Length: 187
Image (cartoon, rainbow, N blue to C red; front, side, top):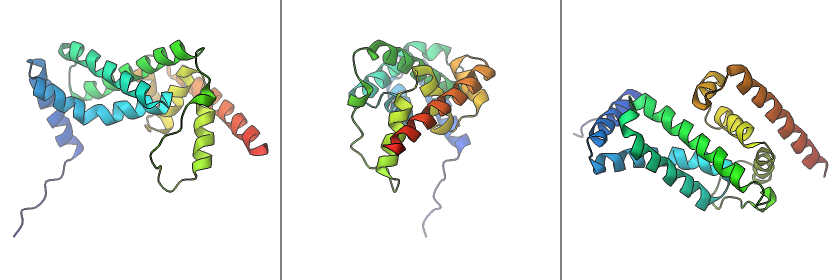
């Protein structure tokens, strides 16, 4: 008779992160590497959806984890770790987008080479193109709201801004995206 499979609940995952965090703070590189492996997909995904460039997203993720290593002593808990990673990634993305804004046309950004499931590839491409037209901060706010499914209050906490500012960016961002999509539909 087989033993029942152990389900990893959000609580047990947070407990595991807490143990890894505590161990990594004491200089255990294996524990730090385990933390990186546990969170690298989320950090990379957030970066990639913002910059739409694999190498740049990898560079951002690497920078975030280098910053994490330097900040381990200031990370208070597993919950704080998740918020810290999201905040640091979004700030790093904003800096990267500002720096490269003048040097690269958004139309030149390559589409992903991996499948997106059963969705309409043309519609996805149009939505991503409309998203890329937003200012960096508005783009991240829309992504955090609709791709990471964060509430506006969580976004405000992550980006250190007022709730009204987040709501304003969401409203304007969605208005710009709708207009862009309507123009594309007419073509």
